[in-house]
Length: 279
Image 1 (tube, rainbow, N blue to C red):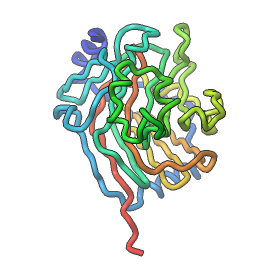
Image 2 (cartoon, rainbow, N blue to C red; image 1 turned 180 degrees about the horizontal axis):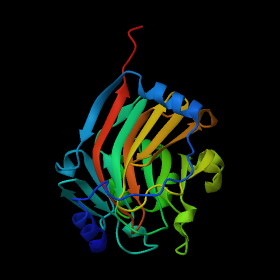
Image 3 (cartoon, one colour; image 1 turned 180 degrees about the vertical axis):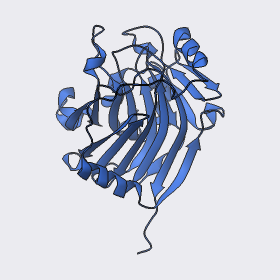
């Protein structure tokens, strides 16, 4: 259990959003903002909501036995295991539901660790690649992910991944290495080369995701476009990826991955699907 991060979470319950942060240079682009606002303004139907205060097992299942999950008054405290460079200390929280079509994901995220290396990931439309034993329904091979080796995911799942609150894996990395990046699994689509799984462009995230600062994150997958907004009390940034670079995905589960030593509070998780046209 990550007692240090949990103690920090408990001590900060009464002071969310009260920590000031210097405003870095804005990365907003008016065209990108307009594209995002148009996508967000489309007709969406909420199909899952999780406040973070109800039992997490009602909506999720877990890969990784060293994780800590605790319902607090201000959301779900979620910490990976405490041991650096330990595959068994990784964790993934998966939705029990699967989703299809255009999708909107929103949640409040407050970082509770002070580790400026390793990453958090959002997994979208996750299914198995299909060959036994990695069947499309990933819940049928949960036992193979009791230790959440990263290769088990990027070699045997179809999904989109967004790295956020992410830093270089070097233990000497600093917060100046912060980035946001999208990838498409499995690795075989990139000829087995992990570095070629990236969906351009990469973005700097320096100045975002400081510990104790609540960020509202919105991710929209619409057709061949993946959009993201990250908003905190002092700024808002927008991100976009062209999915026409990769085979389309439109059905599967959503996951939240913490690599070892990473911890956060999640609340007000909302998942919506696009309303079908009457035409």
